[in-house]
Amino acid sequence: MTMKPARLLAVVGPCDDDAHLFINGRRVVSTRLGETRRFQRDLPDGDYNFRLQVINSGGWAWQARLKLTVNGVAMVDVDDAGGGGLYVGQVYDKEWQCVIKDGQLTEV
Image 1 (cartoon, rainbow, N blue to C red):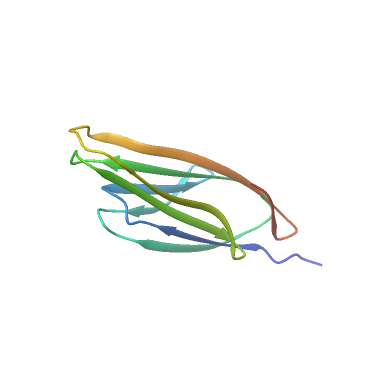
Image 2: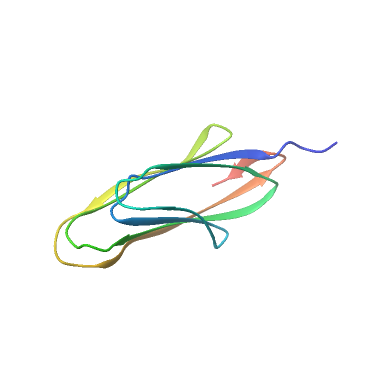
């Protein structure tokens, strides 16, 4: 009997300025200033690494938002922001791991 895969839903954004979501090192979603994107994918059993990278290209304040759910269970809920200044470059870079077994989220 084949197990049904787990269902991933990712909501990326709005972020300031550019955001990239990676799954196991592969970029799957990118957003620009103020955009929000939804991404769905079936995840077969295995180990997964998720990474959110936000790059501030205009200086001043930045924002990072990400919600990851697997089979409707919240795994990641990021709503982070940083202050001003003239720093331009990567302002947010975090990773999360999980394990899917028998079509279910078993480890976070």
